[in-house]
Length: 315
Ligand code: GLU
Image (cartoon, rainbow, N blue to C red; front, top):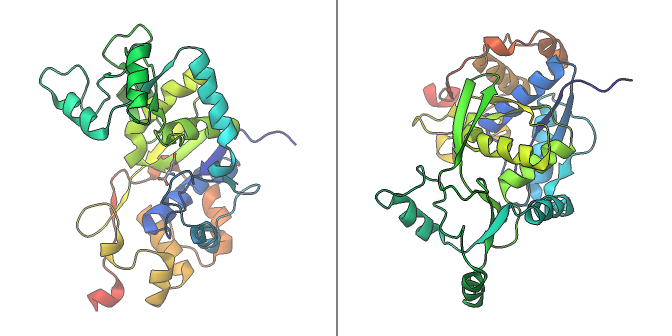
């Protein structure tokens, strides 16, 4: 059999039960992949300390309950540390990294200094040109060093502008600063792990929440440095709670379990999510593949969706 031309993925962090916003993004990522007859992989982004073991299973269960399926066994970033180490070692060997001893506070202060060199929120380059003696001094003071990528090897202070074309949002440009590859505690940073994994898993299309769009130019740049073909991107709108902010516990019944407790079936929840995407309801979850077959990304809403008040609250 020939390789599928599209490989999508879903990459949740097992830090809590999935809410309707997460489930809607999972549904979209699945629809994009399956509508193109593509593969769809599951990756747990579990390098963070906030991971709780019970949520691996509960997330798999909830997504499966909605009728979504995936190819192969879910993978865990926590079991792939060697891959991240190798990628970092490669960049180090090529002189494309440096140690950074700055605290968050120092970065914030330097970045807001009048006439500071860096665009808003970007790393101002404080540690870029430390001498070996200065680094040793900081190390001996017990400061843990993060590792940053040297985006402009010629030490120009400004970052590098990277443009990508998002399938849903069109052209997007961002300034890539010297972002973190490895945190001070030794954990590979999100941007590094995501690029290495998408490359390793042969992902050709990333579908995810548009809150991650600002990180994407960094990932495109890093993929280039690592000789990885950057995937296509489709950033999809978020789900908002009644306060107009991204969905959170305060918004009431936001998980599948919460909705069931209100008397809704899993199919009701699936149809609510489909409705929010402008897609016809279905009578059983078995009809989902047929929905995927006629799925049209161009017809998707471009605005965030506000979760309606629960029926029980309205009554
Ligand atoms: N782990 C990220 C999240 O749960 C998703 C990262 C990605 O899709 O690139 O928001």
